[in-house]
Image 1 (cartoon, helix red, strand yellow):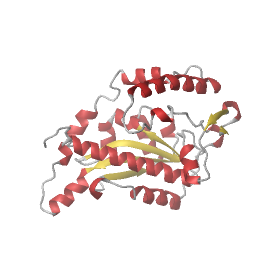
Image 2: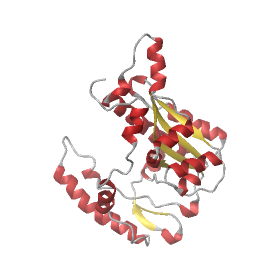
Image 3: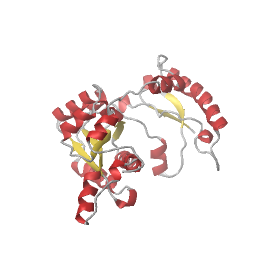
Image 4: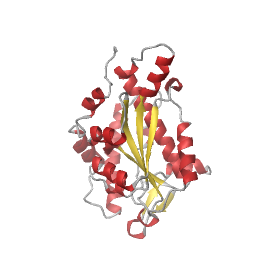
Length: 269
């Protein structure tokens, strides 16, 4: 089904799956919201979003994740600077840092008479990253259900040492991703961005490299048409965008700052 989204000067018809289920409709129309009205997030709504996020699953119920919720305008401006001067961060009503937190589990392990070693392993880092991703998706879904807009902010890893100092994070913690939250400016809502063909994303039984490659070729055309329909012909297609980004390590201090925080990517602790 074709749905028209966004302000008049940017409106294009985007193919979006629509069902009778409101939750699926919301998820299928998710978009990164970068423009906000400046209206406050209601305290009760914020608490409900945070409580829903806390109910996201975590490995072994370790709950090795903490959220730092920032609403002070000056501190949000500092975070925006850390993230490379991103205006969408500076304009957000709330910023939430998703922090991998093996300090919490260290307290629990010590209480039970164990020495914790998992943060010094590849498995520990992956566990923290997976749990943070699950929580972030839950946060965004909860916010969307209450009418708020969000965008994930990986740019906090641009200068993790500065953010660690700003948030006063102890050893065995790491700010892995952020999210902005606010009341979306309806006149500046982005379009629902198309994705690679579903059949090249969800493959039956086994990975099909040929299908993935065909999906990349098809998506280059889809994304090119999507940008052009919005008058943004200067934007690159998928292959060029990914190639440009992934031809360099754009956040080069992550490994060093993780080691400083007590993490190691190893198979033996």
